[in-house]
Amino acid sequence: MAHIAPFEVMEIQTLAREVEARGRDVVHLEIGEPDFRTPRPVVEAAKRALDEEPMFYTSALGLASLREAIARFYAERYRVEVPASRVIVTAGSSAALLLAFGVLLDPGDEVLLADPGYPCNRHFVRALGAVPRGVPVGPASRYQLTPDLARRHWGERTRMAMVASPSNPTGTMVTREELCGLASLAREMHGTFLSDEIYHGLTYGLEAPTAAEAGEDAFVINSFSKYFQMTGWRLGWMVAPADFVRSIEVLAQNLFISPSTVAQHAALACFAPATIAILEERRAELDARRRFLVPALESLGFGIPVVPQGAFYVYADSSRVAPDSFAFARELLVEAGVALTPGKDFGANEPQKHIRIAYTQPVARLEEAVARIGKLLGR
Ligand SMILES: Cc1ncc(COP(=O)(O)O)c(C=O)c1O
Image (cartoon, rainbow, N blue to C red; front, side):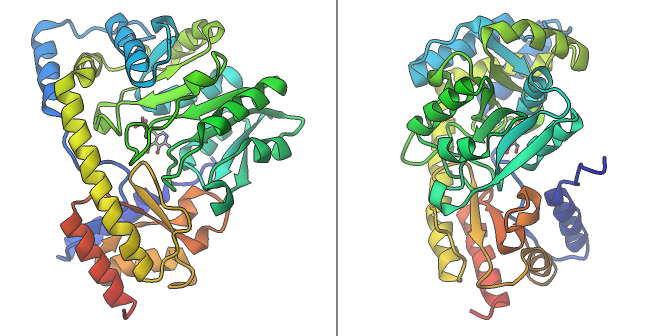
């Protein structure tokens, strides 16, 4: 436990609730989940399933019909053939990540990942007795691990490299060439490449390429949480290399038994045209928020050297407006009623100079937040 830090954003949320309890309005820009409700057709499918389907455990690999639907989604959205036998349904992508690390890592093995990056990954790796190696990344590589950087940091004990694209906290992406380069580097090093694609679908102006294209030996992680707006249902999936499916099944049987049955029935409605139409409207709404927020923050003195093209985060350099992002986040919350996440959550690479803002609120609330930040900064 000494190596597993608290999720700072949760601490900010607790403080935000205290501030609200004192009667102050708080604009919540700290939370990493969309403010939209689960699409109606998905909720209706869940209700029907509760009435009509048995709610027993499913196979540890998930409902066959859902695995097939996900395989079809790859054919339709990405034009990539993925057999349903390689699709494994999990309790959120969190379970998919834990299962993948679980079958791949021995104690002492190292994993290369971008710093800043999603904090839970390093803690999953630590929990297995393996070692997360944060590679400092910045604007020059769009805050992403590139094949060059991975090659430079690949050591004796390195077993795998991973990316999340679009990234949390930066919203930036890797290119198709970089994905393929990382997959082939891992192959050359007799290691494994893992691609976290949970923000796929939430990209603005371009589509994110999937590592399922980069070879059948890559691990591809995805989720119903973000694009499909089902965070609390706890459902995700992974596309695994064929020769790992059996070990993952055995580990999943033991760690989870099976993913949520009602959530799996509900998720079958995710790929229906009526659901996709709702989700695409919401994607446009998120893009409008992004287009408001990025220039507004820049005009307050925040640095955004790479415009985020996906997810719902802006990772801004706050060093020109405040020397310590952690103290700034607390002051902003207590004095101005705006909650955001200090860089500290995302690694050791200049965290005090950065903040993450999640545009998970309507434009009117973002305008209010920008006005409050401006007032606190005397702009
Ligand atoms: C990059 C990334 N990966 C994985 C997850 C886990 O999400 P879930 O377990 O809801 O699929 C998150 C959640 O915020 C994330 O940002």
